[in-house]
Image: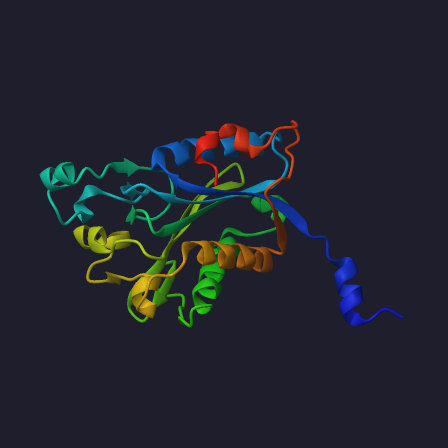
Length: 249
């Protein structure tokens, strides 16, 4: 006689995502990769959903609602700082990406996953909440703005885009990233808020390798998927052929 756990396990069909665990990648190069993968996923060239994990060179990005009015520094200051500003198709307003921030871009078919947009956003928040909980940090959601918060400080951000039911862009968790550039903007278009990082909350640097592993573990649990770095694509290619091999981890 089967136990309840065995029956539950027998009914569970775990899907596999291809996971590309990358190092530091230029933002516009990563965006171009996402667009190519979304197009391939949408027309069935790529069958599995895909997770891209990476860090970025310093960059400010403006979402669909973003505008330069949320900069608190001059154009000259930005030129001297040599940090580019990129306007993109994701939701949300303005944010900063830089080394020490873990960014995740799921290329996911929402319809096949039977997820609503709201349900998808909640899952992205949940994986960040569970990840920082490993270090004893209690993060929560806020009605003020999507993402995760510790008190009135924002620790993780969300900004997604959907094209023909396929998601791209995603989440950004501040691990050991410099918080100074966040002071040059009104993050997410909000006035008077402070950004924080895992490093600041625990009082020491966190291992990015450990954060990545915790993040992947939580993605598997929350989305009920396996993450497979070797899952083949339907055309007999790997996602990695779309990348410069020198940038692979």
